[in-house]
Image (cartoon, rainbow, N blue to C red; front, side, top):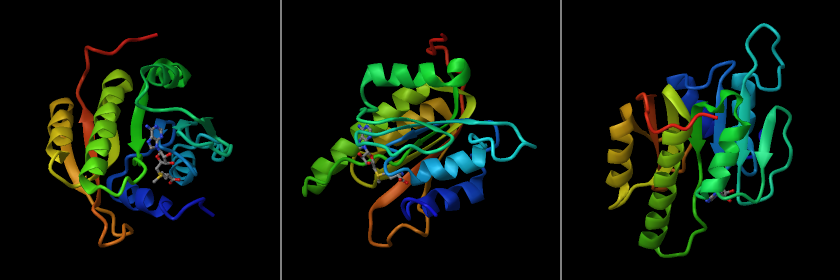
Length: 196
Ligand code: SAM
């Protein structure tokens, strides 16, 4: 029972690429209503349901109110692009590092396609900032974007910090939608990270 059908997009990507593993720490950006977090909680075992494997950790953040979920730490009414929120998320993480960053964030549709695209690119670049602050070397990132003129900015930013960047379009996305995900893997060792 997932809170939203979007769960199946993450399931599809993770079944193929095996990003989420028991014991991992995950940040879920734009988590409301919480379906991706539900998948993450199951796969990293952050609710401790399976006593045979390590227990992970999930932090979910959204501008909207998040309904509590067993195994997840939720920050409601919080903007991921805000530096102080990013610091707060990092402080919550065990050892201040994440293994995986997920972002299914999208701006509210303005009705102007180019403006929406520009806003989503700004959001994606801020997720790239977050990755540079908190992702452990070797870590992964999944980030939603809409294809368009500026997508290459996000792509090249990710390509400079990850060994592998690919584009994935889950079958469970509506065919006509421009929605795509960047899957960036094998984060390079980062000298910019601040350790608490
Ligand atoms: N993955 C979620 C799930 O499976 O339940 C669905 C996410 S929904 C498509 C996108 C979410 O991103 C919205 O709830 C929106 O409030 C959030 N969002 C957009 N911009 C944000 C920001 N700057 N900071 C935090 N959340 C944001």
